[in-house]
Each structure stands twice: as structure tokens, then as C-alpha cells.
Length: 496
Image 1 (cartoon, rainbow, N blue to C red):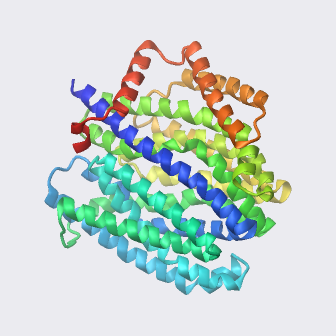
Image 2 (spheres, rainbow, N blue to C red):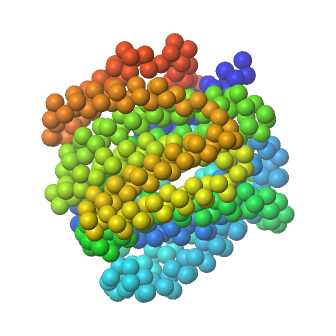
């Protein structure tokens, strides 16, 4: 009975995040035409370089406190301890964020000259430096909502932030401020979001001056993870620098737009992870290993159920989507969409299996896995970009994610095994293949035709999956219960 209630709550929480993430994904998708049409390939390439630079430096300010807070406080009931630990973490992240923002500000001229190849961009880099502080605080503050399993608030908050950011970007670009306007929109949106989140947290638990008395276990857990986002950045984003070096800013912009389209295959991953990690952390610490395996099994299976057809659909529709959302100059990048999209399938292996290292507190293994994949990615980029252009970089990304996903799954089984349902994965690939053929036969071109093709593709995929018995009767019952409770709304749920 208890497990049924927990599954219902889990399904409901996932539903909140999925709905919020669908809206957020649509808004981020809308940002692509806003930015590509408003900035053009070269300026969009510079924006991509600024974005990946911020994403490289931000994790060093965070010290993985967002993950540590969830891992250690998910089972904590004492608000005084939560206050002490949380605000101590906030103080450390704020200080490091200020220091790294100042560092980027001071070295902006050197970066503009050596990396961007345009000294005039120094002022833009200086403006963007404050984003390190704001970006470091945002995931830490919102991790509080996830830790408290207040997923409805978490979803609403992220959705409102995305709406505000997209609207501001559109307004600033429309007013002619271009790249400076985009960065200003990011600064204003993050500042407002951070302040609001801080006051919401104050209202829930009150304030406590940081004393850093309990911070040692957080650092012991989180320090091995500090380099992980930076190394993951090498896999995700270092190719932009190498493309810019070998091929120029315009090619970087084309590649970034196509990468953005292909990357939407795994849009569900953040949604599920927000709910899954605090849930399995609590179950694992309570010694309920069977339930932990159950949650990980079905989470992985349902992610594959969405990511595999998503990757296939984006691959066949990449050119049409780029033609619709961007200018003709970006359409040539559609050839890389399948590589990036199917890299998301391997990324799912990594993102779910790596939780085993978090649960067993063997976080140092994460760094080794990421270093291996990063080395593969950089070496292949250096080899293939001069030979194949942006296609070579896309191939390097696919191989790197394949290496990362495969190694993570193999090593995680030494510590904690759960069923990844290989037969279902094969059936999902088969169903996605039939779906892809149907979409290809339709040959959609306009927005309307693409929308119709997507709907038909979804129907075909699930119809084939059911016909070839992708689900057992027990699993189908679990899934329908999961969906029913995901979208069930009642007053008691709204107060949780």
C-alpha cells in the first residue's frame, strides 16, 4: 500500500515536471528562430561561444552543492539543520560566483582577442561575466524545491522563468540591441528568478546565518563532482571552440542551431531526474533496494520509449525544422541532426546509470568516465573537423556519448544492478524505424504538414510498439496507473 502511494506521488510529480518541461522546451525551441533570425550566423556563433564559456566556469562556483543538497537533505525533517546547511552552501556559492565573475571580467580583453578573434567583443564579455554568479545560484536555489519534493512549485517556477527570458530576448532583439540585448535579457531574467526563489525559501524555512559547521560531508561528496560539469562541457560544447578555430564563427552558428534541434531528443531527461534523484536517495538510504531498482527500471524504460522515437523523428525532420525556425543559411546544418539526436540515446544511459554512483557515494568514478569520453571527443574533433567539417564534429559527439553511456552502464552494475529492458529497447528501435518510414513517405514541408507528420508518427510508433508487445500486461497496468496519477488533480495533491 505504501509503495502504491509513493508510486502515485512519483507519477504525479513527474507529470508536473513533464508539463512544465514541455512548455519550457517549446519556449527554448522558440528562442532558436528569435536568435538565429535576429542575430545571424556570425553573431549567433559568438553568442554560442559566450554561452559555453559561462557554462564552463559556472560549475566551479557551484561545487556540486545542488546535487549534495538533494542527496543529504532529501530525508531530513529538521528545519534548523536544513537552514544551516542550505544557507552555508548559498554563501559559499555566492562568494565563488563573485570571484569567477570578476576573473572573467578582468580577462575579457584577452578572451576577445584570442578566442573570439574580435577585440570589440571585450565589452560584451564583460557584461556577460555576471551570468556566472547568477547561473550558479539558480540551480542551487531551485534544488531546494526538488529536495523538498515540492515539484509543482519547481515546475511553475522554471516555466515562468523561461517565459520571462524568451519574452525579454524577443523585446531586446526587436529593439535592435542584438547580442548585447540577449545577454541583458539573461541577466535580468536570472536576477529576478534568483531573488524570487530566495524569498520563497525564506518564507518556508526562515533565515539562518551560515556557520559552515556541517559542510565537510557536502564537500567530500561534491568536490569529486566539481570537475564533472566542466568535463561534460568538453563533450557537449568544446566542439564550438574547435569549429570556430578551424571553420569560423558562421560555421559555429550553423552547427549550434542544428545541435540545438538534435538535442531536443532528450528533453525529458531533466524532467525525470528532478523527481527521480530525491526519490531514490530516500529509498536507498532507508534500505528499500527493491523499490529503488523498480523506480530506476521504469524510469529508464519510459525515457527510452520517448527518446528513441524522438531521435528518429528529429533525424528525418531536421531539414524541415531548421528551414522553419531559422534562415536558409542554417539549413545545411541539418546533416548533423541525426548524430546529435541519437547521441541523446546514449546520454540517457549515462544520466540514469550515473545515479548509482551518487547513491553509493562513489562520485569519483563519474570524473573518470567523463574524462575518458572527453578525451575521445576532443581527439576525434581535432582529427575529423579538418577532414569533414561540422559533420566530423557531430560524429565525434556521437562516439563520445556512446563511449560515456556504455562505460557508465557497465561500471554501474558493479555497485547496483537494475533491469534496462534490452528487449524493449530493440522493439522501440523497430517501432521508430516504421514511424520514420511513414514520415518519409509523407514528405512534409510546411509547418502544418510537419505537425501532421509528427502526430501520425506518434500514432504509428505506439501502435507498432503495442502490436509487438513492447509492454507486458503487468507493465502496461503500471504504466496506465502511472499516467492516470500523473495528471490526476485534487486538492490534497495541490497542498503537497
